Length: 406
Image 1 (spheres, rainbow, N blue to C red):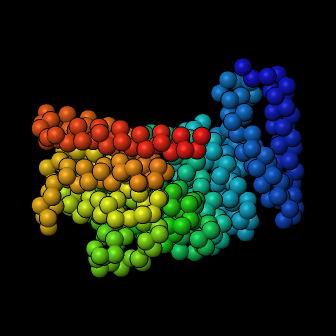
Image 2 (cartoon, rainbow, N blue to C red):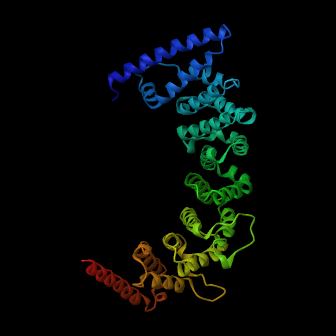
Image 3 (spheres, rainbow, N blue to C red):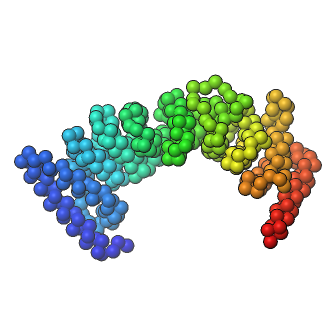
């Protein structure tokens, strides 16, 4: 239920907009350059009231021909290249209200932002066009964006062109647009995978210490992994990245080397990939990254690497256990189960610091649960009893330390 004071405020606001827009038309007729500022102010103010205005239009509390307004003001203003800030507000406004618009009007909007991406000279117009596309997908819903499919190639090229013209600090909007673009149509993504996957991995490596860019590139890679048409391809491309974090297992790569102190970020990415993919896993990804995770867990003393590596091992168990339990190290002939038991032994050792063992309970539960699913409990042999004894020893050592503190 919308409160009466808010209804009255919106009505006064719409009346004010009508007066300002009429004044803007008068200024334009007299060749005054100030008219665009009134348009921009009205679009900005209405955009700020978007949710309330949207609710009132839907419920009928206010009467406004939104389609006519959008055709006459924001969509018409998209061609005003001499006033870049007005063009930005026009694109953003039309994107925010796309849910209430007809297919025909939304097509005009999509064609308009594609033309902005292709012809606008001001980077801020390109960025706002991408944000408007993001709003459109968010408003209409990714599963109902069939009308945008024909525009995806132009928008993708626009994203790449925009990123080549802007500083790193402005990458977020293009990356968010990429992340939502790849969720629209799997078939289109398969046509750009050979360009998009290397770009996403390169950005991840180059800006691994930037949490915002890192988060968006991870989201893009996650989306590619979840896409059944390109999943195996992106998994294959990630192998050199994961291998590069182990000094004695480095591989030739055109990517910059990730500092060993930042290896935990790659482990976190691998965990995300494992939890996003639909089985079966790419056999090369399993064969060449599982040993890396085991190596780091058994040899590293870095707390963050141990924690993220433990979570990654849990992801291997919960997501690809069937493939994992049939794996053997071709160099040593040691099975995956034996490696996991070695990891458990290390982290259940009373000498191992407690803050590195946050994942150990999850790992033990997952290990036993997945072994039971195979209907081959004999795979554990007599090690289950040893694991339980080690758990008790770890708990006992913790109690002893608490008693010392007391």
